[in-house]
Length: 250
Image (cartoon, one colour):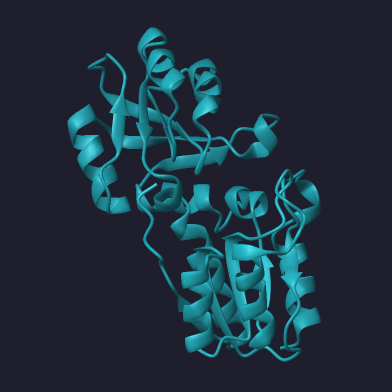
């Protein structure tokens, strides 16, 4: 398929216009016109770009791309090396941030619900651009049992905060750096809130509001959406797809 065909499809499929974001969603660095091989990964770091080069990718699709609000506008140092590698190898870079968190079919939050076997999963309308989701487990679980399950699914040890032993069944979650949405979770009346990151203040919020909080890793909670998107594109358009997971402990 052509670059313009892929760009147009992703713009519509991911409902890009529905989101106010911190970086441009869509084509960020232009490469070759014909696309047959795509690589997906969480962040457009140098290691991922190098793997895309080695895999002869025509397009690299990521959740965390370039040109964030507030960052330096000059293309020097690390940013220059990354962009130079993409241009030298004629690789298109696509970045999709909030649209990939919120997508109802294969976004990070939808995929996280699927991986954790959360039922009746849905986004909370009218709150945080629909990026906070809620659902429930089929049966209540102890905090220890649920944390074990979360660790297994994400392949890392999630940090649990909260001074409560109440069982967990009704949950809310938001992938990435959404620790400050804990107050939204409290208002929803859930037993636990899952996100990727944690701040010092999160501990006190969890304890004083009697809720379980799990900091499960920014990278870990956002691996599933971009992988699912690549698989979707490969199947629909008969593209070669490689998901490359550059490990990140954060």
